[in-house]
Image (cartoon, rainbow, N blue to C red; front, side, top):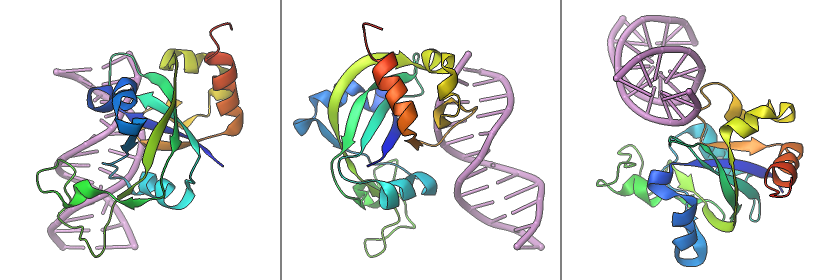
Amino acid sequence: MRYWLMKSEPADCSIDDLAAMPGQTVAWYGVRNYQARNFMRDQMSLGDLAFFYHSSCPRPGIAGIVCIASTPYPDATQFDPASPYFDPKSSQDAPRWINVDVRLVEKTPFVDLATLREHDSLANMRVLQKASRLSITPVDPDEWRTITTRLMNPKS
DNA sequence: GCCAACGTTGGC
DNA sequence: GCCAACGTTGGC
């Protein structure tokens, strides 16, 4: 059981968009980075939990918690010439890109980037590093605990 | 819109 | 296999 942080542009798919999906589940398509792909392919397990992070938007931050709801399978968009994620070098026989399904667990109190930065114990988080572009990153269990118990608790 | 970081591409 | 050029990400 591992913890993750997964970035999504809310203009593309926000936490509310996810909540409105059938089964509150969505395929995490469009990953075109080998490191992020390998996390999905090699290290994610069914039931792993992930922070759903809004990136490239006026207020970046963690908007909710999702769980990994499928094993990896080929990303359909790589075969679709009409998709921005089309990859002409990929083939049905040897798909280059895969995705997992992700299901909403809960929409949480929003934890913005500035708040994450205020906590020394989170300083090593990948998403806080300068120009961190990786769209899927592992989250340390201690970091997970700090965020869920201290930053998402409305009473704290 | 700027710009730093960094992954990818392609010529050699 | 090196490395310069290029493209993309993403916070500000």
